[in-house]
Length: 160
Figure 1: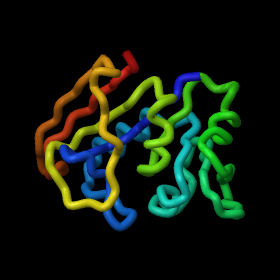
Figure 2: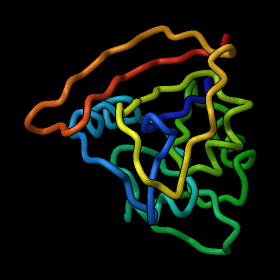
Figure 3: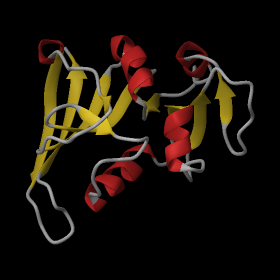
């Protein structure tokens, strides 16, 4: 199984503030949808809360220590438990938040990384990437336009 992180970070590794995204980039949202559609997404409860509903056309697994049920989602208590539910799958997508990303980094094979070329004030950050452990296999750079306030790049990394 390929374990893949899908994340959008700023130049200073910021990913959120007050459980909200820091930017609105329609092409990045489409990129995320295209990558994960039809697959399994694994996320923490706070990430689920920020989205507000299960992501459509995907199997949704939510990690939480709380004894809760969430309609349309499978709820587990750990990343290991979430991954174990996916043994028959070719690829699973880790989609946040910061703590789940931190736990997943050692077992991740691929990262679909969007870098927003701007620094943001934030309270939530992605773990620093040790680029010596990764090969960049694809990159698409995008400039600002009428719908995208910040320049950004789509980068695919595979573990070295």
